[in-house]
Image (tube, rainbow, N blue to C red):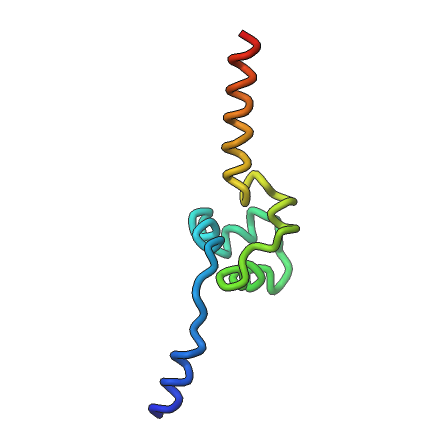
Length: 86
């Protein structure tokens, strides 16, 4: 039994930084719903991002959800353009 416990301890993988974003959006079930993924395995697909990260193709499909820094950058750029127009 002790060997099994030690072995499983080693198998733990760290969370990918993207996981904080999935958590902030409501977790894997909610994210799968937001993306409109209804097939079996969709929630598991999102759950896999905990260790693998969000695939770049998914981030590019939905920058409004998964690229908040880009969204903030656009907001700042738009604000700067508003000042120039005035």
